[in-house]
Each structure stands twice: as C-alpha cells, then as structure tokens.
Amino acid sequence: MSEDLRAEIEHLKAENAANVPQDALAILAGGPLYWFRDWPNPAVPQFGAGVYTVWDSEDRFIYVGMSGRGITSKTVPRNSRQGLHTRLHSHFGGRRSGDQFCVYVGDRLILPNLSQADIAEISRGRHQMDSHIRSYIHANLGYRFVMVPDARTALDIEKTIRSGAWLEDKPLLNPLTSKS
Image (cartoon, rainbow, N blue to C red; front, side):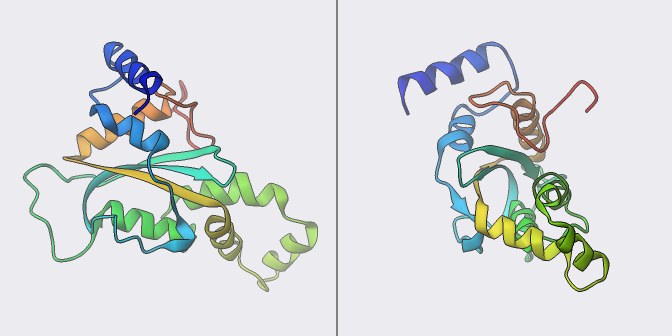
C-alpha cells in the first residue's frame, strides 16, 4: 500500500466517515479487478456479507453496493448461496427485474446510446433491453470486493463510499445525495 493511500485512509478514519476496516477502502479502490465476463469467480465466497465497487474498462468508478442484509456474526451459513455471491451473480445476468444496478446501467449507460432502430426493435419485442444490458456489463464492467463480518459493517462502508468520503469520487450511478 502506498504512503499516499495509507495517509488518505488515516485521514478518513480520523474524520469518522464510518467505522470502516482500514484495508477495505484500499481494496475497493485499487485491489484486484475481476471482470463480469469471467463470472463465476471462485474468489467470491458463496456465503457472507460484503461490499463491492464496479468500474468500467476506462477505470471510471460506476457503482458501489453491498449484500448480506440480515447477516450477523452469529448467522449460521446455509447450504445455499447467500450474500455477495448472489448479488454479483444477479448483476452478471443483466436482468433488470429485482436488480437496481441493472436498471441504472440500462437507464444511464445503455438507453442514451441506443439508436432509434434499436429502440423500435425493443418496443416491437424483437430484441430485449436486458440483452443490451447483459452485453454491456460483460464487455465493459468489472468489480472489486471485500467480505466483512456483518451487514452493518457492509452498509457503513457502502454509505461512506456513496458519500464520496473515501479515496475516489462518488459513484456515477448511485451517489449519496441530500435526497438519498
């Protein structure tokens, strides 16, 4: 970790932006970047609370999210997937139904770039908006993630990042605003 990065993390902690594990912000800003096109990712545990940041192929910060609501340090892992793994899998699928990230990608990154012919094909049912979203996610977006002990910690980290009180700017798609 560079001295500048370490100093920035210490500054944020001193300001009490959130009760955030020291290395979490550094990993979410500059840790390994995994591409959605390579999903599934064996590095992502099948159970647990976590936070993730999404970046595009030009290293633009797109989105931050968390998963694992209801998970505490006392939650017994299920035999099925729960938490961060299921959230990232949902994003990989590119379907808007039940996935706010995919809705944002469609509304903010896909729709403005569709031609009138593309829109006509979607409205006639000859093409699906979700397939545009899925293709875009697979071609352009990657993620960084950290696992945390519980949902409360994940939510604190997510809010800190959405507010811009970290090493990068606010996310393009879901910044925390005074109205959020």
